Amino acid sequence: MSILILIIYINIESFFIILHDLQSLSRYASSWDVTPYKLQVISMPSSLLEQTQHSLATLNEFEHQRLTQALKGLTRQQINWASGYLAGLSQTQLPEQQEIFSPCATILYATHTGNGRGIADQLAEDAKQQGLNTRVLSINDYKPRNLTRERLLILVISTHGEGEPPETAQEFQRYLFNRHTPQLEQLNFSVFALGDSSYEFFCQAGIDVDLRLEALGATRLLPRIDADINFQQEAQNWRGDVIQQSRKHLTEHTAKVFNLSGASSLPGIDRSNPYQATVLDKRRITTDQGIANIHHIVLEIDPQVIRYQPGDALGVWSKNNPALVADIIQFCKLDAETPVHVEGQQFSLEQALQNKLELTLLHPTVVANWANLSGSEKLLSLADDARKLREFAQDRQLIDLISEFPAQVEAEALINVLQPLQPRLYSIASSQQQNDDEVHLTVAALSFDAHGRSHQGTASSHLVHRLQQHDVLAVYVAENTHFRLPVQGDTPIIMIGAGTGIAPYRAFLQQRQCDAASGKNWLIFGNRHFKRDFLYQQDWINFRKAGLLDKVSLAFSRDTTTRAYIQDKLREEGQQFYEWLQQGAHVYVCGGIEMEKAVRESIAEIVNQYGEQTEQQADVIIENLRSQGRYLRDVY
Image 1: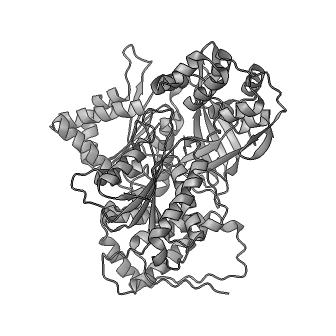
Image 2: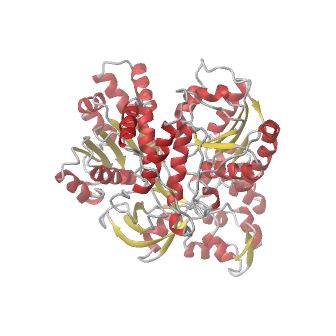
Image 3: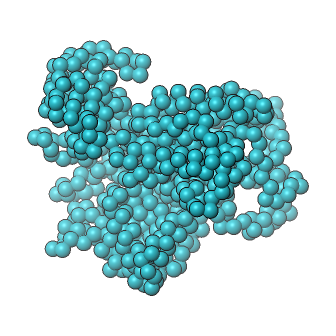
């Protein structure tokens, strides 16, 4: 039996979507029973290949980058399929630059952790089941000027840092808030904003987009949803409501939809359905005298199921410390075997606390709810002041709260107060092209003393202290499409990182080595002590010997009487840094938000000094670097 796919018309944007879906499908191919089917692949004739190569030369840099990125990670057979597919498209006589906007809802997601994409994909699947036509795009792949031709736009957008949208939404934001942006009276829209109410600027990115669309004359389908970290039920309710409202605008135009990906019917690996990875290796990469206890962890994966690229992160589902669970149960004077219910399932109290609920990140809503249970006047007064409530929760864990403000509670009441356990994201420190069936992580054990006791982080203590070789860990890939290597291998890169922020650069250089990329590479790294905390020192030495790492600049803040940080090292080497910028270098920054701010200020000073620009002009240049994809951040 042969499968025939008839393509009537498709534009280049849709082609990228199909390639993305093809990459997703390849993860599950090993589990398919394809014996009865035969896939016919059309090879590209040499004459047509020449035409295609000529056409490729007419692509601008952005289009070329998108095409190359779309093809990355595909097998030879998949590339053969794609070449035959493109060959068929080239035979059609369609006017160039023509775009067809069918009556469908456009769903855009802007996400840092992957939650937004999950909501968008599920919304599209729900809509499909009800016969509605949708298209789902990362906001980074959407042309903002097409807003004037949209009738129905649905956005899922998260907030990052101090009220900022994810990096992928920067171009969309610039267009939307430009004073020349046209009116959008024809547009109906809905915004699902994701955030964390423990931060001051809760859902601010979604709020800003929602209000701006209204100001441009667009009409809301529904009031904006501002969802907290426990967003699943709200997302489910919103999906039903937005589909119901969308039907009013789409019903009379609904057409048959040919689903080329079929990915929705496959058991995809994601946040809700993680992959069970096996621990191959775990070793400490700081000395015993180092203040930070940092480990390199190697996980075994199936490359047919898990695919990642340098710059991506790995979502890790961890477990709470059994000793902490026991202390909480003891403080509350409860029985560990008491049955409780979490998300409709029954567990013992001990199981629920260890595997399902957040114990180390104290959310303000937990404090407010505990105030009602304890009746404490101090807590009740805190609950009325959002700023003080956030400050109180920031350096405390649940054990601090219940010991300082005891309350008589039933097991079920305790469970209902707490937030669900959240996965933690770790930058991937390996290239899959070099380590096909492995994924490497760099994990620093979080520990601190406060309020009369020692504290540990949930995931980091699990990974560093309790995880053993051959143990199994639930993981998924969180794509970070805005923190990628340049498509052109001869482009210079400058990699700036502090502490574990060095992790993605190990993956970058492994990838560039595999690609035989000729571009220059400069690593700027900071930590406390050279002898104790120089992470992956031998790797960098090997890269230098291989001629891959052209320049290394180090800032160890505790090795000198006057503390020197990364931003100071940048200013010291400002002239060479500016020369690299002039040569087209891409600048990467990975680490804490405050570090990135200091780095950006130093770069502005360098541009001001060596480029003879005013402060305002220097700020504009940095923003231009961001819009060109030459200043890329992965901050936390």
